Image 1 (cartoon, one colour):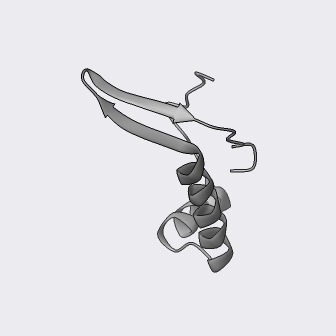
Image 2 (tube, one colour):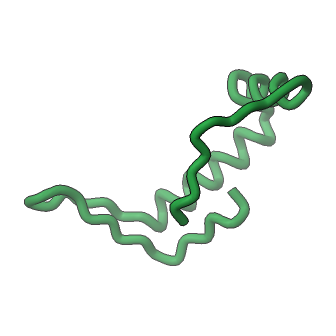
Length: 65
């Protein structure tokens, strides 16, 4: 963890596909991300504490997101 991409450079077809999937995702892409978000919602519990927030993470597999 801790890896971060600060600048993403896309050219040609890659940039067109990225923009298309971001602004006009296909039904398959929408279903995929809805399923992933349900999994995250089911396995992460965030509660407010006196000095911030506490997150309880259960068995959460993010390998195919």
